[in-house]
Amino acid sequence: MNEVSVIKEGWLHKRGEYIKTWRPRYFLLKSDGSFIGYKERPDAPDQTLPPLNNFSVAECQLMKTERPRPNTFVIRCLQWTTVIERTFHVDSPDEREEWMRAIQMVANSLKQRGPGEDPMDYKCGSPSDPSAAEEMEVAVSKARAKVTMNDFDYLKLLGKGTFGKVILVREKASGRYYAMKILRKEVIIAKDEVAHTVTESRVLQNTRHPFLTALKYAFQTHDRLCFVMEYANGGELFFHLSRERVFTEERARFYGAEIVSALEYLHSRDVVYRDIKLENLMLDKDGHIKITDFGLCKEGISDGATMKTFCGTPEYLAPEVLEDNDYGRAVDWWGLGVVMYEMMCGRLPFYNQDHERLFELILMEEIRFPRTLSPEAKSLLAGLLKKDPKQSFCHPSNLRSPLRSTRGTLTMSLPPSPSQSRPRTAMTAWAPSNWTSGPTFPSSPTQPASASEQSRCSDSAAGCSNGCLHRPGGLSLCF
Image 1 (tube, rainbow, N blue to C red):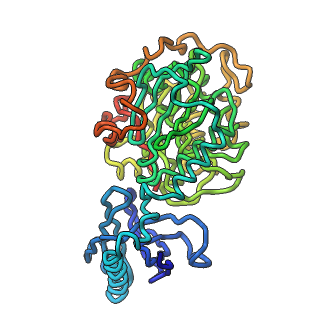
Image 2: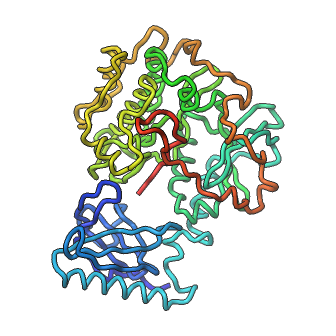
Image 3: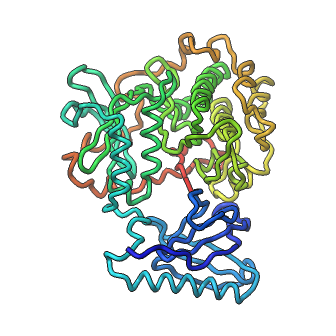
């Protein structure tokens, strides 16, 4: 394989994909086709700090334009399996020509290489990539028990998405019910989701908390990863709220206290969750919270440490994430504020089907409350949904008093949940019909998935103009 070298580097102004502002980025164009951008100039080309932007110019198209600013150029290229366009501008026509000439030269060079010479195989997440497969195997082997597919009865399809399925299973030896998450390795690698999958595996293995979904077993076949997890048969909190429209303030405080307890535990272990939303909050048979889906967690974030990645679900993104600032643990408290607002008010605090307009509302719009909301509830939500994270309830100690209720507190010895929150616990009585339709299991775990299994879930919000709970689950993004 040819040694990768830097062909051109320098400052560019990149236009945001969602908030259409121009942001200075220091870009490196490399001989393997990678085109990576940093918030600050890296100390050395081989530095290990993760970039904010990571594109490939292989088989790209280049276009000149003088709009919306002079000396602008657009790159249209593949990012994993999706065609994307990214817009840049520079200070002079000559500088634009230099960048476009360098990018075209690298693209032409890649086109002339044979299949075995293309260093982009690894960068693009080729299914034949041994490093990515080994990384997943290590992550699973740490939690591997001596179990196989044959140790379970497969009862019901609970959900399916791009990467695989979640199936209700019964362990033959114990008779206990679990949720088995079955992920296809080829798709995970092709869509560059190895890091998220490894993170989820690590967090599941290293955490034990009553309000976090527990991992029982992890194992693999030659083409699939299998996580056998605690089955929260109360269903998604989103499902219950969409049926009831709003929860009482007491019930919302109860759930809020349990979420705070779980987040405080994660933060104490230097893990930031980053994707709090109704769809990731399940209920167990007694009506207690179970947080699930740890793929967007960020590890190693101590108090005061920050992150850079544009990451999360659009309706739940904190202002500091949208402003492209470094952000910290406070993003989890913003997410808590959004879900508690939904529980108490029956709609999102900020909503628009146009994501650009949605982000403007999150950044600029003042929060509004229904007249029926109590002063205490308004104070709690206003404290969680501060635009400036330095002014928000960024520490659990600030939340204990407003979240305390007659039925639930922040102590670990919570009494039984309010009677109205206890769900029906027939195995899949709570599940929407579109979740449980279809085959309960692929014809064979080792056979390729069908076309319907591989179709991308359109999880983007599609609710009413007020953000009422008619939307399917929000799509988590990480750019």
